[in-house]
Image 1 (cartoon, one colour):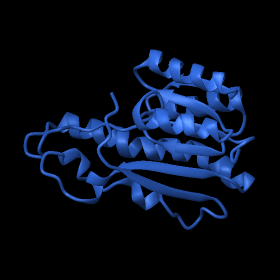
Image 2 (cartoon, helix red, strand yellow):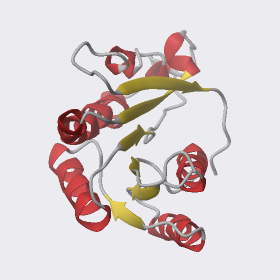
Image 3 (cartoon, one colour):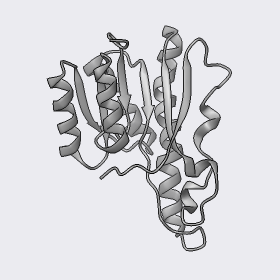
Image 4 (tube, one colour):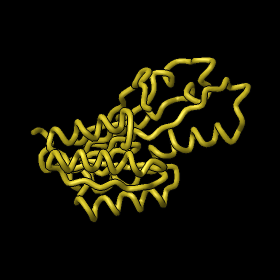
Amino acid sequence: MKLAGRTAVVTGGSRGIGRAIALALAEEGADVAINYVANEGAAKAVAEELKRRGRRTLAVRADVSDFRDAQRMAEEARKALGDIDILVNNAGVTSDKTFVKMEPATWRRVLSINLDGVFNCTKVLVGPMIERGWGRIVNITSVIGQTSWPARGSRSTPSPRGSSRPSWWRPSRSGCVSASWIRSR
């Protein structure tokens, strides 16, 4: 088990890619805090699966687009599971409207979750990782963010790739994974 003794937070961990990541981290020995914003039942089901695999876990509701909520989530995860070693910024939303048809409120919602959420969660968790000299941050993005797609105006914005290799982040690692089409429901 490569991650025995490590603890992870997976945002958007109740279903789809996030669920699969949480299960894979647990399979490698990590304890996992599962973040969700709406589907408590799905988050608790993932937590129960992790417990059956012998892992410590926590399902914690938080809106990652809200900095204070991200801080609270991180604190709850630390209290329940100990120091956080791994952050997977997976929470994200999309809008299947062209840029011309998209409403400003929809644009703001997508950016606040997909970009502000990455900033918020990374900001509240990276400091202790740096202090301990070990940490991993993985940002799940979309291949749509690397190209332009007319029907995905909100996903054709730059991905948070700028955070993938910051100069101050040594000796730890961070990176982005750009997922293609994944059925998450």
